[in-house]
Image 1 (cartoon, rainbow, N blue to C red):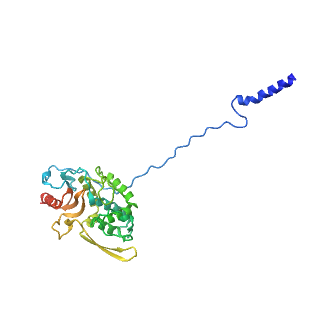
Image 2: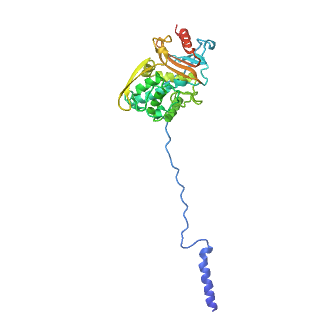
Length: 323
C-alpha cells in the first residue's frame, strides 16, 4: 500500500514539472515579429517653368523724379534693358493688384498653350465653375458651353478684363481655379516675388491677395519676354468668333480698357506697347505699362491711384524720361 501511494505521488510530481519551469509541452515558444521596414515614398516635385532670366535690378545713380512730384500712392519705373530702377515710390509696400493680376494668369496659360501647341485650338469650354465669380465682376460675357481658343480667352482676359475669361484660362491650365492659384504662387516664388501672394486668377479683392509695385514690374517683365503676349495686351479691339453650346456661331467684340493703346484717346501713348488695367474699391486704380523708347524696354507700374491720377502720372514720367 505504501509503495502504491509513493508511486502516485511520484507521478504527480513528474506531471507538474512543465508547469513549474514555465512552459507547456503542446505549444512552441512565440517568435518575436520582425519590425516592418519603413515605406519609402518619392518626394513630390514642384512644377517646372520656362527659365526667364530676371537679371538683377538696382537703383539708378540719380532718380529722375522726386516722390513729391508723384501723385499716385505707389510707383516703380524701370529701364529693364539696363536693369535700372529710375523711380521708386513706396514700391516695396504691400498693395492690392486688382486686375493687373491677370498678367500672371495670362503668362501661365500662354506658356502651357505654347508648349502644347494649343494656342489656336478650341480647347476651352466654359463651365458653370468658370462663371463662379463675384456678382460685380467685370466680365467678357461668356456663357456655359462656349468653346474658345486659348488666344481668344487671352484677348478676353487682357483687353476686356473679364473675370470669367481669367477663370477659363485657369481651368484650362490647371483643371481648377484652386489648383491654378497654387501654380500662381509657385511661379511667384520662382520669379523671386517676396511680397506677392495670390488667392484667385482675376484679382478680385481678398485680404490675402496682394503684391508690391516692384513685384508687379517683375511679372510684367516675364510677360514682356513673349512677343505674342505683348501684341495681345497692346491691341485696342479684337473680334472673336467661336461656337456656343449648340454649335452655333457666336461673335464678340472685346475692347481694351487701357486707353493708352487707343489711338483715338487723349490718353494714347506712342511709347506704350502693352498695358493692363485694374480697379477695386480696396486697390484704387492700378496700371501696368510696358514701354519702348530708342530700342530700350521700360516698365511703369502705378498703384493706389485715385481717379484722374494715373494718366497724368504716365505723361509726367514719359516727359521726364523720354524727352
